Image 1 (cartoon, rainbow, N blue to C red):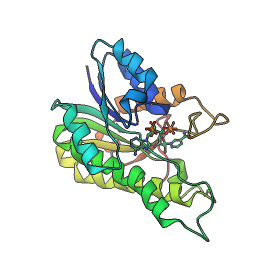
Image 2: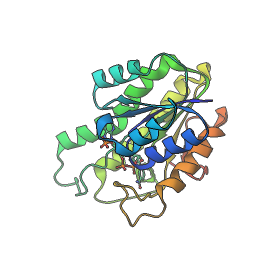
Image 3: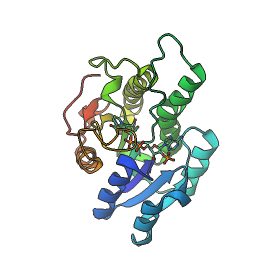
Image 4: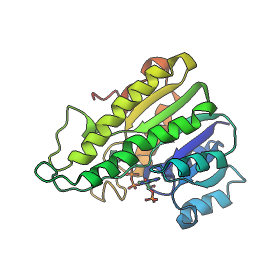
Length: 228
Ligand SMILES: NC(=O)c1ccc[n+]([C@@H]2O[C@H](COP(=O)([O-])OP(=O)(O)OC[C@H]3O[C@@H](n4cnc5c(N)ncnc54)[C@H](OP(=O)(O)O)[C@@H]3O)[C@@H](O)[C@H]2O)c1
């Protein structure tokens, strides 16, 4: 049985990852902003014989991350999924940028995973895996006019992951970024390419077969490397 910690667990791709780890009999610390508002996750937890517990965590706030992490106890964590993220404004910011909005997105998408990683670091051991949610929209091989805020935030996630991977090699921690595909969630919209189930099943399989030489890279949900 693996111990899993996952942010943004109440909906979207994260909720499907929770279901897959539950099916494997893993112990899941589900971290989310509003535990009381997550009906589907609460129903899963109620039937999970204690395998799923819900813990309040807003990744944009230091104190919330500290408290939410402490609330999960002191067991080692085998896989930390940093899924929580926001899209931000869709309008181009090239001519008129709202810098407060930009900082808000960076706080959730970039500082958020770093906050959570640091909070759990004492509980990551040799072989523990960190999966940070990046995006092809943050890769240099993609251009996406009108999404400057989101694209820069995800580019930063990829670099952050490489830095974290390099900085924790001596501890045996493996950290990667993942591009989950264009996924039919609230963020991706109904016209997206793949279902959250398809994305989650690829990502859980990938997380299960990571090797140290993969640390620091960006991978598609299919497991193939992605240029960043
Ligand atoms: N969908 C796609 O096509 C796609 C493509 C590339 C990358 N991604 C990335 O994949 C990840 C998951 O995306 P998704 O499609 O599942 O998105 P989603 O359905 O919009 O879900 C976003 C999740 O992030 C949580 N969240 C947002 N701000 C938060 C905060 N401050 N603290 C804690 N949780 C917060 C939300 O929680 P609440 O319910 O509390 O709002 C929700 O659980 C994101 O990082 C996204 O950028 C998605």
